[in-house]
Length: 387
Image 1 (cartoon, rainbow, N blue to C red):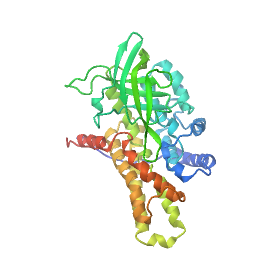
Image 2: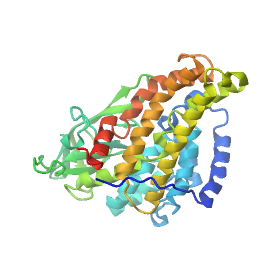
Image 3: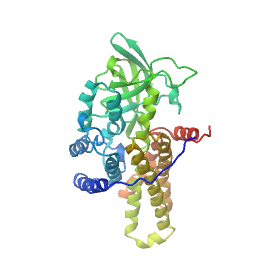
Image 4: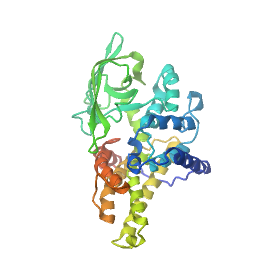
């Protein structure tokens, strides 16, 4: 059984100093940005905004300067993410590349790949998607069936990925596929990761999976005799499972795991500010207080993991806790706001109604991002020695 501790993580003075700079940037570049767009948080895309962030040095912040990064701390990066997400900034275009694909590429990519791709990511001009989940695999990632077979020119990939965020706009995918048949004695063996050029590789079809709000966040991706070069193999053949589990720690612990519904809490407070008496009726003040306290607890857990990452640790199980508790908080928010204010979600109306209507529909899909709740609970149970 793993020992799970969330030691309070304190942000250093330079990180808090950076916060003011980020807020000034947001005030300038998101002036007049409507609440219903802010409610999309890290699912909203604006390539021009991504380039502006790149110009500020806020993409690839923790990466070494010698590869094109900025050599700053994980805690400084945390402040930038927290401010961008709480403001609902449209960061989705570069999000996956900055969060996990870039670090993976720096560790396992070829020198040529790093030289060509990393600077483009840092500039906010190169986007990634992640090919993990597959149909009929459910929560069992080890049962994937997409396979890569050697050819005279490299590898040929056949299969299907599903729930692939932003695949329709990605320049590259890092895909987990089988390079040898599954071994019953070691279900995690025989998998490898590949860097796939989504724009140039023939035999790739991307089809949208729209959420209840009509947005194309997720996609199905089909590979039909898609040929990639030998150097597309990332890391070692058969080492994909170890690589992908390390990668997921970056995906599951950040502020994006509890801030996705923040705009609704903001709109709730704004809706009540003109009627101070409403805060004392029906327990409104207490209801808002509970939501804020819950969010602050999740923030403390998340910043604790950020300090672990800064020390070079791999807090995979702790990250699973944050992801599971965070998505429950995000998905419960519309119902709690309804209980506080007594207003049902609408598709029109003012800023509050628009945000409430959007998040009531869109939040159902939040539990698909970064692994379903069933996956998280299975990981937690194993880590606690319960299965």
